[in-house]
Image (tube, rainbow, N blue to C red):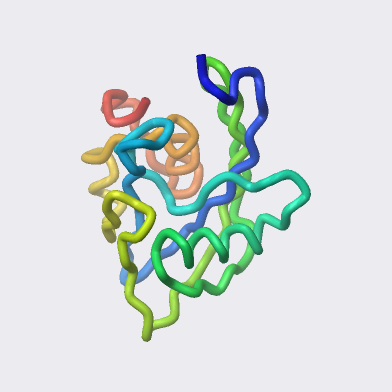
Length: 144
């Protein structure tokens, strides 16, 4: 059983777009939902600001100081043993900074047409569908 069994987990993620491509990151092998792709971010501790946590996580995982913008959307997704409440913020990486894979397995800039080639957790599928007005129902194997 998951260590988060029965819990509602608050997560914050970044929508980072450059030249028509979105930044996605691959979860570490030792993570929950290992090696799946997602928008970069992570869990928000109780009582913490989503924006502050997102800034710290992106510095820690990708080595970049992002500018956190507006809340783009909030997605609630129920997994078998827990629920994720995901807040997605528009973020910008300053041009003089380059993404590094410090706390992620891999990071890629991906065109929306390529998303179905990557395996995402269910919460990210819902985010992609809403954010990009895409429909992955033709390729359900792309998501868990």
